[in-house]
Picture 1 (tube, rainbow, N blue to C red):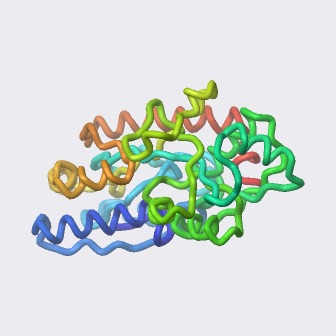
Picture 2 (spheres, rainbow, N blue to C red):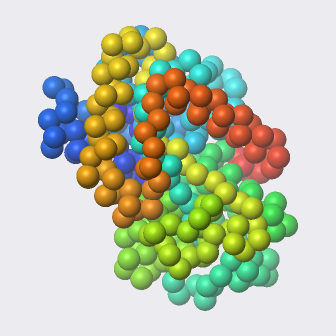
Length: 294
C-alpha cells in the first residue's frame, strides 16, 4: 500500500486506518503493508506505480497531487489515465488554520493581518500540489503578494509546525489538525466547502463570505497499469466493504470527510478525467510558478 505523502498526514492516517479495518475484519488473506513515498510531491510514488505495470499486489493511496504532479512535471513520464482505478474512499476537505492565540478570528481579519505583515510564512504538503494550490487561490482572490510557502513532507508535520509557530497559517485537512483543534491550540477560520461540515458547524464557508473558493482532496485507491481484471475486481470488492464499514463511515463523520457515495472502476476513471481537466485549468489560472514557488 503505497502512500504518496509522508507520515502523519491525512493520506498516511487514512491508509493505516484502512489497513487496520482490513486486518480486524479478516478481509484479506495477505497483510497490507503501508509504505510512504513522499518524494517530489508524490512523483516518487507515481513513478514507482508506473514501473510496477502488470503487478497485481500493489495499490496506491492518492492525493490531488495524483493530478498536479504529472501536469507540472511532464518529464516524469507518468500517465495516470493508464493506471488501474479501484475506488474512491472519500472527498477530504480543507480549512484555513491559525493558532488559537494568533488574535485572528475571521477570514477578513486574516487578510488584513497578512497584508499588514512584511512577510507571512505558510506551510503545506509538498510543492505544486493541494495546499500550495489553495494558497495560490487565496493570494489571487485577495491580491496578497507577501506569502512565503514552505513545503513539508506530510500534513502531520505541517500541523505541528503551525502549533510550534514556525509557520503562521496552514490549510490542513481536518484529520491532520484535529488533535490540536480539540486541545484548543488551533482555530479554523473558513471552510473551502459548498456547505458547512458537521464537524465544524460554527465555521463559515468561503462561499458564505462571498468568495467562491471550493476545493476538495480526493482519497482514492488506484493500481499499476495493466493489473489483471480479476485483481481489479477483487480490490474493488475489498475496498467497497471497507467503505461501507461502521469504522470507516464513523471516521468520516468525526474527521470531516465526505463519504456519501461509492465510486469505483470505470466511474472512478471518469472522475479522474474530470479532475485532471479541472486541475489543468486551475494551474493555468494561477500559474505553475505561483503553486511551486519557482
